[in-house]
Length: 180
Length: 441
Image (cartoon, each protein chain N blue to C red):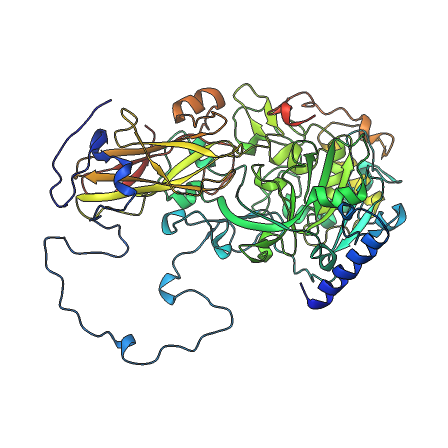
């Protein structure tokens, strides 16, 4: 801590005490921010659809983006590559306890996670560069290729949370006592 | 319990055996009254019986040494003490860097050797531009700079961090022959200093409907985990310092979430956002990656805790015993639910056990170093450690663990983390030549 900030703390302490307020309120050095100010970072999408942005996309539109921005690592057919061996498309019944068995179609419990993950982390070299429509389009392409939605379905904030994933009930919370 | 009483050959103090195959009473260690003979492969010594070479002045004592540098790096002779990398060419995907437990001692992991699991590389964050926002189900959303956080009351605590996938090679159907670094290197312990999350939440206020918070990083994948609020609020810290200096870049510079005892991945690095919510977000990492398949086809999710574990670091594979004699068995124990209360050692594959000495201080959710004197007479031995924590949890045997959690059908690559949350006993077999192998016993 610099002397300057020490001085600032001392001044703050005097001000707080002088105003007759308890010091337990803390330094109060956070700056207020409103929803508009947070929006660019507030990217979490929940299973009930909370956090999904305006926009929409179809599998056919997503197929074009997939070829241009995803196939290099995930393979032309979505079955994976040396760079990323886990397939995006396909996956048989889970027959071992290996994580290599887990795919979107046989394991992921919520379709909203596909949207959330693509938007925050993909493409690998350029995360957060896809438009919201493009993320809906890619999500639609992947879910349709896994036969989890129809080829002509359109995904949006209304329809995506309604996609029922096959393994939705395949989970056991290990330590439920730690969740209130 | 088998008891062996034998006169020591090479030592001046007689020590009572407490368990089979040469395990000696830990009280012999308290005053370090024993002259420990024998050596691992590093720092070779001659037999005690042979006379030492005549002493002479070495060249470094005959001239001034090097100028002192502003930031010191270790001796050039220590370069082999390094982390092993699972993805050294940084192909897209996770990178692991494992702590060399067999070459370290004490309870604190040097910052440069602290394990890392990285999902997008270490970002080059300008600390003056970094921001932490706390929002969601709070009364006043607030943004903090690093400079502002530096003016809040700070706390320090020693705590281990362990990847949920540490020790995954023990799910292999056959014991994988590799070092303790390869098997258990995704765990480390440091002193972390920072601002308690509860201190900041006093200023934002907490809405009564908040049950979780989302923690998110400023790295490329914007790594994100949902954390239960009530069970972490007492301990959760925004860590700003690691072993007294700012965090290492791969450990979250300039700030990370610290959740002592909780799965490593939840201790989100490059922390930039905390959002209080009523339900978990079910991110990629919590709904796919950090879940564990079970033999019945279901999967554990929200495992959260790193359960009680121990392993012997010396002797261990690669550290060959050069000659019969007295050795110190040493290792690490830790539990995500509190203090280590007891560590027992076996040298005969679990037939008999003796209690190890615990190095003070024994801290909650921190590495505890244990020691046990052992006389090795060149006959085969199988070394095991087993830990208990203050809550009464005990480390399972591998047979018990596998009966419940299953094992893989095929031997996996040692660095492939295909499974999570294995805390069973590790066994090292010492053969007549003193070579140490990983076995299931």
